[in-house]
Amino acid sequence: MTTLIAVAHGTRSPAGRRQIQELASAVAHRRPGLDVRLCYVDVQEPKVADVVPAVDDAVVVPLLLACGYHVRVDIAEAVTEKQFPVAAPLGPDPMLLDSMIRNLPDADAVVLAAAGSSDPLWRADVEGVAAQLPGSARIGYTSGAGPQVKDVVAGLRADGAQRIAIAAYLLAEGVFYRSLHSAGADAVTPPLCHDPAIADLVLRRFDAARLTSAGRAL
Image 1: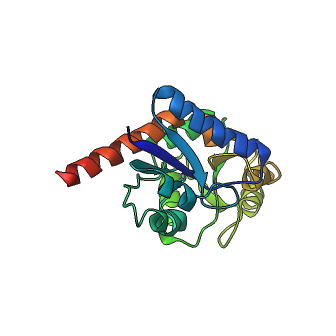
Image 2: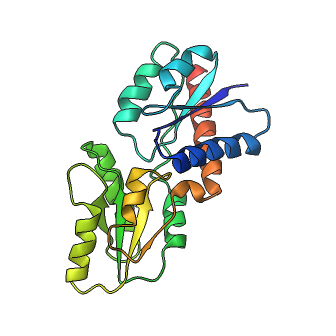
């Protein structure tokens, strides 16, 4: 059977590490017999480049929310020799949007909080997600260039917003997610991996990439 190589970013947060491990376990539980191997592009071991050579047949599924540098460079380079198919990242996807919306309380204003990136494809994905949130959601980043979440929240307060909710476009806990709780908003949605449907999304990405690869081989 084809192995599912799940590639997460990696974090120093014990809670975040546990959440990603639980996600990988949930994927394996949903499909008994499937070999699910978890690895990372940064911070944690094993790295994806160490796992790929040990597998004969696999589909790589990025546990990432957009097709940024880690997908186009780190993962792509890791599979160059084996030529394993790489699935689309988890986001953007209607399931992620629905999860955030379900967890958003009533609010005067919504801020979509995402990890910062200079990658134009990543920023375009984030802008697309924000456009589908209720109201005129503003975008704030937890790092890098661009409007910071706390500054966006402060600006909304200055404009008269009484209740502000942050829609966290982050997969698991870590320094970026924890920073949202001190950004001045009234509510923060949970990390996306708390939604059980994420495991189903991982398997959909796996199946789609495997079918596409099989079709090309015909």
